[in-house]
Length: 176
Figure: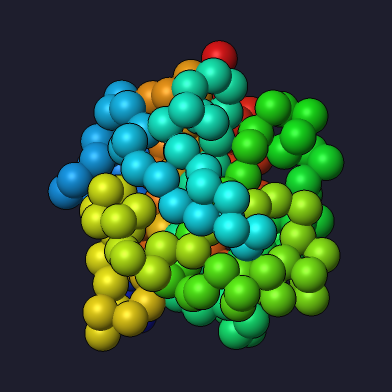
């Protein structure tokens, strides 16, 4: 009986934690309803991308990952790649961001056949603008931010690897 009670308490804690994370309203810097930070960065081709301009209308997902071409980051990117047609059908523009060089982003994009842009944030301006924590001051924490018409509608500060696209599509299904 005590074991069953302990299991029920643990299950309640897990459910509460999952609910709290999925309904997160702020990361300490950004909160739901905030505008896209006005920040620019180079993509894998060296082209300057202004996130506030690109995301001014429609949906835009900005996801952060620690390091290109590593197993977890590859799983996260490939999740979005594999669901890209579904994301596109909902009008979602996708941008991946890490502290990797432009050249490394290009290699990552080509190797994994990623159909979306990867931004190089070597100067740490994008991570700072979004409030994304840095690991050892060298890697961005894995996080995801969904904007609609320039306003933050969802964030995940404990972003999944292979379920990233699933999480975003579930949120999109709830949007009006």
